[in-house]
Image (tube, rainbow over all chains, first blue to last red; front, side, top):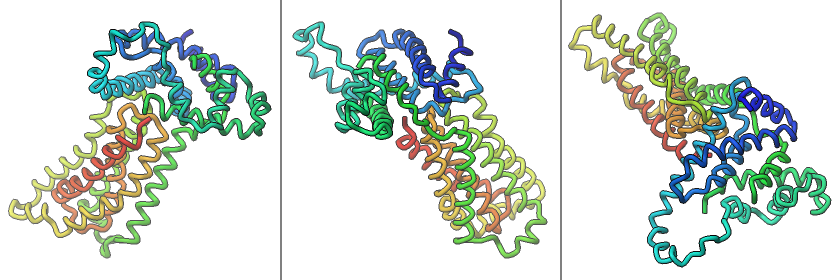
Length: 175
Length: 212
């Protein structure tokens, strides 16, 4: 898929086409994943965390894309910003952790369950927002289904989803 | 949460992401000028001899410099509020106002006797200038930073400095209508210090405030 097709998808998405937006985000995730894998080989960072944080930033800042221009430079700039951010955070923490971890490294199970940054951010949400975000993401419900199962109005579900995602984006990778 | 699941949640969130950046910037520009105007007319007001001053080149040229600064800094601020903007084109545009000022200084030194230079540079309003340009510029700076926060600057400090320069240019444009020290030597010294304060403040504030 070249830039023109991707930009067309993004424009449709910004006009409210939910399916086009899903497709756009899938494509964006693929591009960023390949890009991030090459840049996180030195360990410590999980490229998928970068992918997820970038997708959240794309979502929150999608109004900063100039819809008459190419989309890839914008996309990779967002990804680079998030990668640099993650590296900086890791640099701040590695100071203490290296000493603490030294003794544990040998003992640690090689196949511990991967801890996703996004799940840690999800845990910080209020119960109401968390149940809405979980229903729509993990359980794959639509807005209407989520409203029914949580006994909420659809508008309230939309608001909780919007605020919940914004809060996740804000808290991603921060303690 | 797998990335697939995250995408489902993002795609379902169809509430508008926010005002388009072009609207945000024109709104910020107009409200910033209005705020500066209100503070200026409340605290200072134009000089009493403005009608006769308006016939002199020195007085008018102050506005050429300050408006050039505000306009060039604002265009850079707008560009820096988008993540993909690099540093290209930054220096040439930043150099416009200083180049105009340097040309004016050269002209001033050519037409005035050397023994008046220090009096022209020191002037009589240095303290007023250092107080009121930052004061008038604070409101515009806050508005520019709010607009910047809505954007996605890759270099928040640089963008914040541009916000400070823009606010400084707007404030200096109003202040110039009050100040009776019209020599480019005065402008180059005291206006520069006052605007530099706002620029520094903008960079420091944006570092925390415009993160995303």
